[in-house]
Image 1: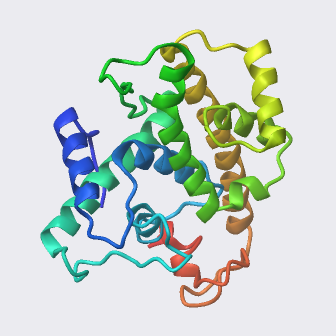
Image 2: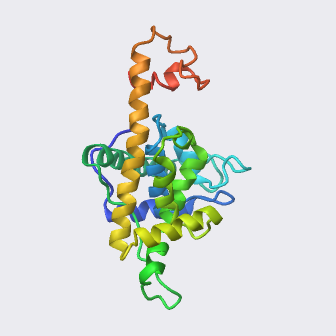
Image 3: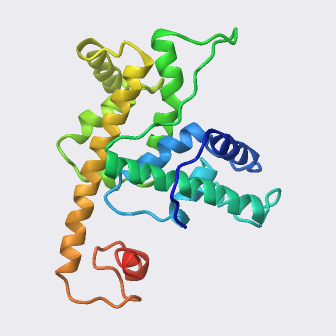
Amino acid sequence: MTSSHDLNDAEIGELDDLLAAIPQPLDALDVVMLDGYLCGVLSQPAAIDIADWLPPACDWNLGEGGQVLTPDTPGWHAAKHERLMTLAQRRFDALHRAMVEDEWFDPVVMQPLGDDDQPLTGRAEIEGALAPWVTGFEHALNHFPALEELGHADLSDLLACLRRHLPEQDEDEQAYTKALDQEHPLKSLDAAIEDLVATVIDLAAIGRTERLKVTTVRRGMPKVGRNEPCPCGSGRKFKLCHGRDQS
């Protein structure tokens, strides 16, 4: 399933509606969180298929008693499922293309409103707009930890630049956020979005560099049967892992 163009505003709204329509007890991401989640998936050092990344997007609790959404899930049906997959894959493909070719992308974020339905300003505006997006990115890291496991020297600082937007932080994260606010203050939502995008591009570059290393090693290895275990050690069949792009 590939795509030649990104979602328009109406389709982003449609995708959000589809996510909201996923029946309980599944707890799906909204479209803003999904956007951050997809970028987290795309930053990984190994390509991840929709069959693996879509289920955690459709149930926040997957892996902790949650369930996988299927066309046969009660309260759901095949047409909705196919449309959800189509829109999500198109956004995934567009983000991937933009991150690789343009080294930039436009994240899906919403203008946060206060209790009086008026737009927030200042730090509250930045946190309200970006916290859901970064929460989605963190959700990807929780389900696919390979990027953090690389141990790259720049990872901690880059991830701290994202996590500064999360409302819930431990003491170390709070201290890092305070230092960032002093040394690199974000004076507007536009500036914060630019900083977020640049940070994600750097994270994705780390993952992509590692992916290229794996590809180089793989090409120098003896031929592996498609049904044999992948040499990378994942435990999956070669055709479902690093041999996928050869099919």
